[in-house]
Length: 201
Image (cartoon, rainbow, N blue to C red):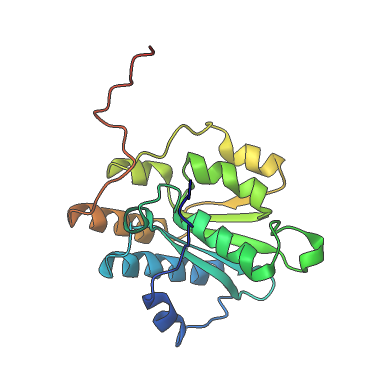
């Protein structure tokens, strides 16, 4: 039996965008503004959902890896922006642990929306030590996205694992992209609304 090879490529428009927009992004607001712009462009180019992320070197403010949501276009439910950014960053540095002292960097994940249940679970294993969020979980839920079951004290649990969390950075701008996507008729994927659980057999 032969199984398909899974290849992931960022949308081509990202290369064009970064041919003139290179940073560094020294302020956290600059880094958030960048990923919000990527989320807008992801909608405009019809390459995915209204979410984007970036992994930045904390000291230099340089972008290590961008990520945009490609769930629908890639037909892969795991292609959330944060997951894409983490995978690309790990390939760039050649290591599965972005927090490894041997890699010589300290990396920050900046996401347009707070992580869903899947991304929340992946962040500690990635080695990320800083998480910056724009829109809140309830902003995504308000337009129909299913963010999964998350513990109420997830920010505290991240801190307990050595990951600093900063929330509400340019929240209104990030939430505005979610609303725009919803109002334009964008696909709301992953929603459990209206689904009945199957009865066990």
